[in-house]
Amino acid sequence: MFSKSCEYSIRAVLYIYKNTQDGNKISIEKVAGAIGTPRHFTGKLLQVLAKQKIISSVKGPNGGFYIAPNAPEIRLSRVVEAIDGPEIFKACALGLKECSEDHPCPLHQQYKGIREQIKNMMEDQTVQQLGKKLGEEKVFVKNENYPE
Amino acid sequence: MFSKSCEYSIRAVLYIYKNTQDGNKISIEKVAGAIGTPRHFTGKLLQVLAKQKIISSVKGPNGGFYIAPNAPEIRLSRVVEAIDGPEIFKACALGLKECSEDHPCPLHQQYKGIREQIKNMMEDQTVQQLGKKLGEEKVFVKNENYPE
DNA sequence: AATAATAAGTATAATTATATCCTTTTATCT
DNA sequence: AGATAAAAGGATATAATTATACTTATTATT
Image (cartoon, rainbow over all chains, first blue to last red; front, top):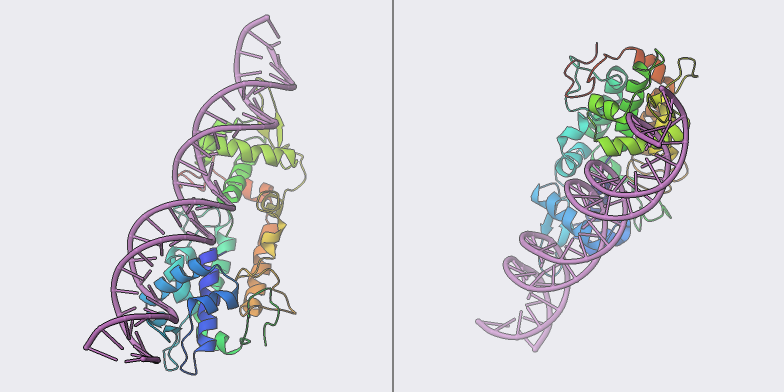
């Protein structure tokens, strides 16, 4: 469905939200540890999320990543588009470059509704909504204690 | 959504069906040419599809791949499972190993219905149904003359 | 026996995922 | 104020996976 980068990014963003509403910031180390993703790769993802203003970061001691409590709603679609690109919501089920109403692939009619639902789901869900429901620690690691 | 291997395989199977109902057989060369996939890679895919009895093949002059006119319905899900594996229909949207009703990821409730629809779509659609609708030549290449 | 085609195994390339290393920023401590 | 250390940022390197190509062997048909 989505790339690993994208899956990791969503998990990271949710975790960061949940754990920085008190004004704290959180390090790459802790994020990666908590969501069960590789440290350095996670760092790179957070970097692009920060550059895209999806999350905030500050350098230096006591620095880290965070999402401001008053930040506007962040839709999951924004994360997906930042990482996997927006085309992912338009892709043909059979991989055709030019699959459309005019030139539909054999699955087009059946698939387009589903694809639309996926898009809607990601546009509807916000980091804030989903993040609130998260447990505190190691939430995504082997699902041990998740969700709360 | 699906891997390229899987997309190619579905395209190939549909094309083979469409073009072998008259008792003909068709070579890898022609399949790959018609559906716009790399020759050798396509050969390998057809190999596994044949081994899985999804399609038939005969060697030698006038040999090639085919689907018998009286072959039982082949559901697209069978192709997907042969190439990408059956787990693809159970995968978590956020990539968690153990996402389930008991340990749902934050998107589980929203996603499970969609995933189910994808599965149903692939289980409902058969090669025979979809194949019949196909055009004759180069059907998937740049969508030039597809569908009929 | 010759041929034409598949079958199979291995090799290369591209992409994606991951790790390393160095730089820059900045808070804190002296 | 200056030194230090903690953190992200950025560039580049390696590994794994996926996609693709090549080469040889095998088999069915004529």
